[in-house]
Image 1 (cartoon, rainbow, N blue to C red):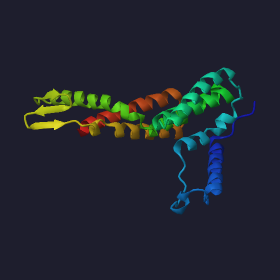
Image 2 (cartoon, one colour; image 1 turned 60 degrees about the vertical axis):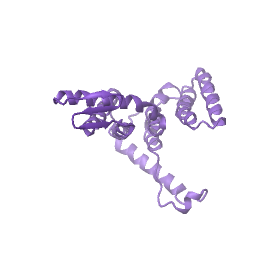
Image 3 (spheres, rainbow, N blue to C red; image 1 turned 45 degrees about the vertical axis):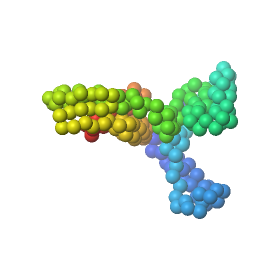
Image 4 (tube, rainbow, N blue to C red; image 1 turned 180 degrees about the horizontal axis):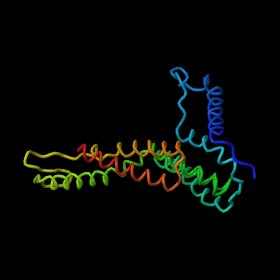
Length: 220
């Protein structure tokens, strides 16, 4: 078969595509944002998906009719969340609906290619708030272990740590949530830009998550 185009040619195509979008939307006046906008900033997930279009073009379309059923269920849940003004529910279901729609229309291989940029959207959804209690508890355990390691007498009561010099509270702000989200987002984007293969990509995310947590514990 025909050889795929060189990687630099694909990147130039991506740049041309983004330039075309900028040219089409740069002077858009359809909303109030036009009055204060100074430049267009592309969503990372959207730009990531555009960067994958060369890879998607080489995948034959294989519609999966069976995926219409789970897609219908997700869309029904989405409609209920929308009607009920459940913003978090809408945000959680939207990337999932997009992924299932791609799977149903184009096949599993296309959905797998777009899985990472769609999953990237979850880094901007406040679902991470539910991880705060666990991250906070992990910070407490790490602090207790560290004080014992360096020979400091400490007593832990919930999120309070008592040492001879006084008492300090490991609050929710010390959970490391922001460290974790920013590190995962940066690592995921870097992995995509440098074309890391699947398992290297997963390993990079795992190392990044561990590094973010340890850095937060050291900060505490």
